[in-house]
Structures are given as C-alpha cells and as structure tokens.
Image (cartoon, rainbow over all chains, first blue to last red; front, side, top):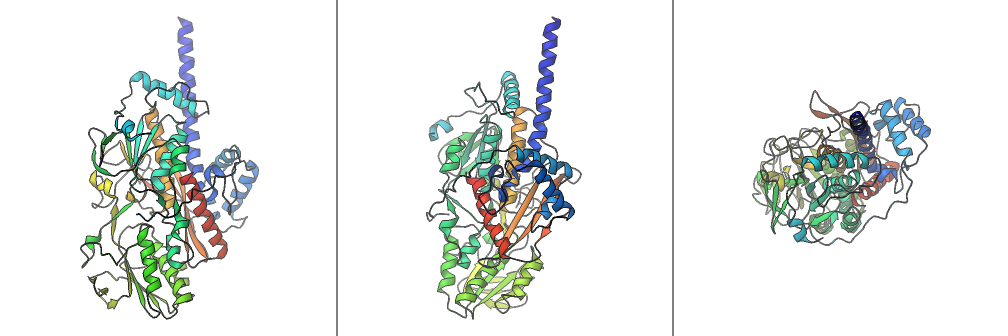
Length: 116
Length: 431
C-alpha cells in the first residue's frame, strides 16, 4: 500500500512540475510569437529583417541589451528592447536559439477574385 | 471535411476522466511528445472562430500548433480569399496592385488541419453554445469572434445608407479599386476630399497615410490637384509630427489638413460637405464612416461599450459578459491601436489562454506583446510606431511599456522594413 501512495505522489509531482514549466514556456512562446510580424514564423524571416531562429544566444542578448541601453544604434529595435526586461531578453534568446532554421514557405498569392 | 460532419458535432462536455487525460496529454504535448492516444472527440474540445482575417486565422493556427492538434478548430468565413488591408493605401497611390495583397486560404487550412465553413453567422445561442449559420448550426466549447469592424454609415448626416459612388475603401477589396479608378478618372485640378470620424477606428494612421498616397499620385500625374482632409478630430491622431513633415514638406500645396471638421451635412449628389467652418465640393469623395464591432459581435449582444466595442479580459480575451466567448482584433474596446500586428498578438495570447483553460490550468496572468506599425508616405519611404505592451492587473488593461516611439523621419530603409513587415506578417498569418 505504501508503494501505491508513493507512486501516486510521484505522479502528482510530475504533473505539477510539468504544468509549472508549461506555464513559463507558454508565457515566453507567446511573447516570442509576437516577434513574427517582422521576423517571420518562429523567427524564420522571409527577408528584409534578421532571422532569429537558431541565432546564437549570446549574440541575441548582446544586441538586444545594446539596443536597450543605447550602446547599439537601431532604427526600430530600440523601441522594443527598451520595453522588455533583461529576463525577457534572456528567455527570448534561449527560445529562438532552440528554434530550427527553416526556409520559409512561399506566400499563397492569388489573383483578386472581385469580392469583399 | 464535409459541412455535415461539422454540423453533426455535439457540444463537448468532458467527463472528469477525459479532463484528467487532457491535463496529462496536454502537459506532455508542450514537451514535444505525440498526442498518442487520440480520443474520438478532440481531447481539449472544439473552438469555433468567426472571421478569417489577421486575428481569426492567427488564433486558429496557434490553437492547433500549441495544443499539438488536441483542439478541434472550425473557421466560419463567408469570403473566398484573404485581402490585406495593410498596403491597400498603396493601391490608391499606384505602387501596389490588389492582386499583390490577395491570398488563398487553402494552405493555412490544410497545413493546420482547420475545419472550414464558408458561411455567415446569423445568430449566437450563448446559453446552448451554438452558432446559427445561414445553412445549419454549429456547437462549440469556446467561441472566438474576430469579425473586424462594421461601418455606421447612418451616423453620417445626409447619408442614411451607403452610396454606390462614394466608397469608403476602409476594407480592402473592390472599393479600393473603385476609389483608385475615380482618382484616375478625375481631371487634373480636381479635389479629393477625405473625411475622418471621431472615436476609435481601424488603423489610426491609415487616413493620413492615404492622404500621402493620393498626394503622391497627384504629384506625379495630376500636379494641379488637391487633397483636402476634413478630420473630425481635434488633431492628427497618429504619428502627427511625421505626417506633418510630409504635409508641410513634399506635399505642401497639395495636402490641406483641416481639424475639428465634423460633417454637419453631406449632399451625396453634388458631393458637397458642410462643416462648422466651410462648405466644400469634392470631385472624388471618400467618407470614412464611424465604426463599431463587427456584425457577429452585435448579433451576440457583446458590444457593451457605448454599443460600439466589446469589453474583454486582456488575460484571456473572454467577453466581460460571456466567459466562453472570446473576442480579438478590431472589435474590442482597448486603449490599443486597431492594427494587424495588434490583432495577431491578441490572437496568440487568446490561443495560449484557451489551451490553458481547456487543460484546467490558469492562463499566464501577465501577458506581454509587441506592436509595430508602418505607414508609407510615398512609394518608397515609410515610418514606424513601435511599442511593447504589458498587462497591468491594477488597471486591468494592456499598458504601453516605456521606451516605445516613432521614427525620427520617413526613410527608404524603413520602406524596406515595412515591406518585410508585410511579407512576414502575411507568412505568419497565412502559412
């Protein structure tokens, strides 16, 4: 019987840990997904902006901290970097470093069909 | 997928056992393991999304991806294709065609396993969690409304109903082409009059970008013509300093900006507008109507802020009136610009929260996201406004973080960034 309780406790602990980690992971992948408007799906840019997928983690932090403290000049990115915390920058660096670099799919262009 | 198979789906009421299974598999799903034991019913339930614009399509994609396929997602959309409002002002300026802004839904639909119903919602049965369509009905566990804006034409004095030759072109499509054709047919020396409503409307800098685009066209092809902006607002509502640089610089003598110029009377036959200060006659008239939440939000009775916009909880985007109905994009009441990037950012927060809620977990209580918006002043040069927004639990709203701001000036470099923005947000939404 003790063994049954022990394994139940163990199972609860696993679920609890998974949920807690999933919560953090969920928060950072939601924030990271917000970067897609300029940097492409999962950080794979179609061009014109840097690809963030599989980017070196230290380089990401170095650039973003530079935009944040003004030591690296930028056209747009300082307006984002200054609004993020250092912890968020570190978490984003780690997230994007783990994303696979992929060739983006072609856009599904279509001729205008005359509606709307 | 057949229409019937969707119509046959029943409301999903998970048993306690199914619920635990969802928690476990859902938890595993976040770690990249396959959802190996798929129940006949989707483990995390059925989400119906009304509207396949930037907000709705993005929510659909991320609900499927982040739940590892454990959620069933059905989109209801009457239109056959996606037309991008961003860059549609450039069609008026002549540097883009509408074809370049038109996209098919098939890729997104197939690759994310979306169920798709080409139809419109006629009513929402909130108590029984069903939407009525023109052909049949659909049951949901959670409903997302992403209908964009509707136009309140009847609020315009003298224009009780839409008038065929006065397009607003505030949703990209045939009206965009119509307005472009009117500008092409207008003789040199003519006047293009555009009116801007007070209160929240889609794309705050959009009217001023449009004025620049029309002026760009005039400058090249009809240099004696004028652009007159009758703004009902007290001042330029977005990127003011930057737009003034263009109005008083490149477009001096072409663009004239009049503030506090609410329409007192509009004669649609002669295209004459009377304001407090003047009476003007347009050769080409573009009345941007007052706006409100899209029709389905009105039909569901969820436009509870001034009868125009929908109040939501910014942690989950649930309606303040109905916790299992989520509203994203231009229809919500927020101190946030109604932009495409904002719509996609809200859609992602909403998708993550719905997965958490369906798993029985608490959603992230402090969402953070970014918004970047570019405006083109001609065919090459653009400028931005960019901000990070984070949830403030005391204010119960998304608040602009410190450090955001606008360009120093419009530039060709930012024109290239603006094009990259468009291609990347299209890719994020449509692939």
